[in-house]
Length: 415
Image (cartoon, rainbow, N blue to C red):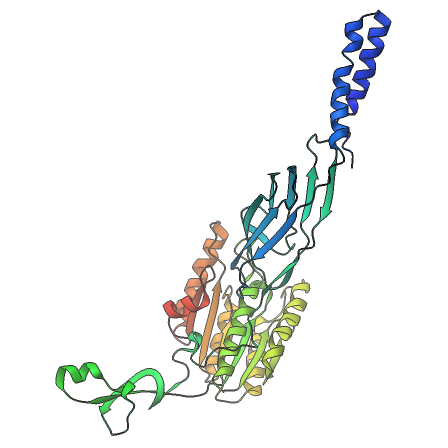
């Protein structure tokens, strides 16, 4: 496409020529050659075709919302002529926020030369496709430019891979799948005298080196775990620390998937439920792992579109009804894992309700109150107060979402 940047030179040339003829000044007429020279230069370089190769590299996929992925965009000049001016802009998915760097690069390229830009995006839950990068180039004189797309697409998935479930000893369930009886496991139970046939790997060699006595280490026996994993999907939970970060429900869905996979890997029975005052999802017992994500995503999508808030209703009654319905639906041995940001008192009442039913309760609470504004600071204060109160009736994992869930479990106590 012609940029018409030299069009004024045509008028200038004609004006100088006319003025020289009218005034019978040869010098003025001859000066019309100067703008004509630029026009000839533009025409001589205008037919140059610019072609570049663009390659995008996306870092390994991450499953946790809020994590970052590095994207590299490399532009190469494969021709034997110099590219004077080329600009490439990547097509970043609309749902992803560019956290650091620039998704575009510009400059000139000699034959075989490359230029590169690297930027970082913050992941949101779901499957995100990068479109075709846009290439904008100009010839040497700048008289013509071209715009095109490069066939280079990529996809990044932000979803826990439930089809590859973790080992039974997942960090999220440390201490939750052992009995008081000695047996096979990884958590220390006691020492006993060595018996012929005991595995040498279980001999306490340190004690043998000190005293000469042979002893065998006993571990707490591992057992299967039955649990219902509950996602708090009420309107107060659709809150994020900042506009560019995922909200607590996105983090919650990830935690539910992790817990569901871990429980299933122990060989126990598992169920998933979503708690919402505008319509809860009842416990879905023995749901295949491959369907958990789609069921959660469908219910959460409906709740996001439902702009209603709980106004004028009896929250305590609704909470009691939900706890009673879940308690009647699942068998007595089932433990309850509640995933909630604990942003209001209703979430605390759900925990106390399950505890009053005789259930062992663990709360995994993603913290989205860490931003610097005064409102978040006040919410964080009340949230920490709720956590202290709930630890008398339940185990609570306070998950700072800026770190991994595994780190929160290891540092915040066993679920």
